[in-house]
Image (tube, rainbow, N blue to C red; front, side, top):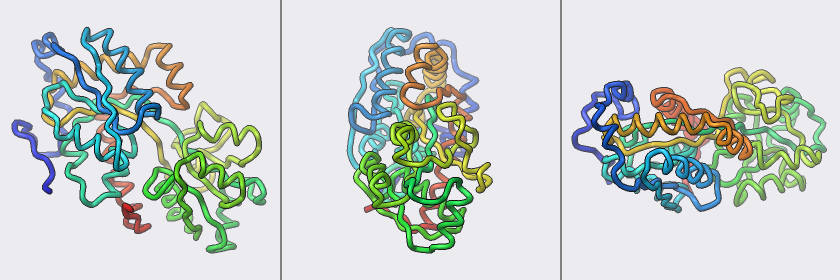
Length: 330
């Protein structure tokens, strides 16, 4: 099936790259919008990170816009079902999607048969939250740093294995990027989710996991796993004592879990700008920031152009990793 094309969206580059046009938003469009409830698609199950953030932002948007934000969970196929529904929706300002680093980043590299194109068929609105991943190992290993761990792996090629939450997951891609940049040989063992993957490290079935920091914090504090570094470019306020992987031995290494709002390409710029401006204000509110931090993330609220650049960069990076590691969808 060919990717979706939208009439009236005139741009020589991708939809994401056309965001500077937002500055020319017609005043009348903002004044009249919205006039009915807005559907906010979540491409994952109730209770996960995307859902919790969508409902948090949706409740606040309902108050400031004067119209209900209706959360619509569209689960299935690793986020593809919900993302396709959003891509197919009318670009009239009344459908949004709370995307994440998987649905709007990794999936573009993992699946060859997507019926939509993330860069062409969506307009980035704003990144709401970002969260660090963390490199943890079984504490029985002698390595106390990233450099020592890399040296251990190089001295024992093929001996050790790492866990992920499943084939094609963020943890899988992050670990494969680590393997490539560090030049080490460590086997992949997919688990059914991050919790059992962490359990595999605790139990000694595998020696490494590179997933979201918040779920690992309890194990780290209880010394059931040893945290070596975070994967973000800067140290995390959640664990400032941990170095970044880049500063600990692999310059340029960075992976980030993130959540952000998108609209179907062709959505009127004035409507996109209205939503973006209100969401940025919401993210800056102290109570919202506290709740996002409690979820293990760092509030963002960047410009549409900045968010679009992050999405493009992620897609390009994960495509390189997928090719180098020969990662394909199940």
